[in-house]
Length: 53
Image 1 (cartoon, rainbow, N blue to C red):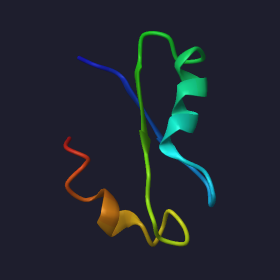
Image 2 (tube, helix red, strand yellow):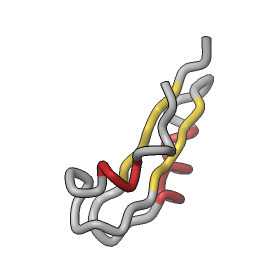
Image 3 (cartoon, one colour):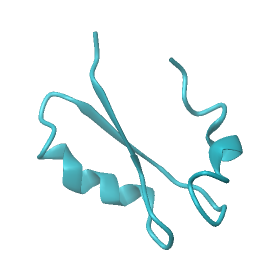
Image 4 (cartoon, rainbow, N blue to C red):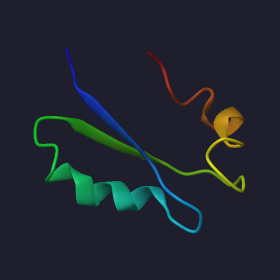
C-alpha cells in the first residue's frame, strides 16, 4: 500500500511548495495541488477529478 501526503497551499502559494515536505516524509508520495479559488474550502470543486481513493 502506498502512503500519500497531500499538500494544499495557502493563498498566493503553489503546488511546488510540496517539494519541501518530501524530505520530511521519506517513503511517502508527496503531492501538491494548485487551485484558483480564494481558499481551499471553495476549491473543492477544482480538486474533484484529481483525487482518486
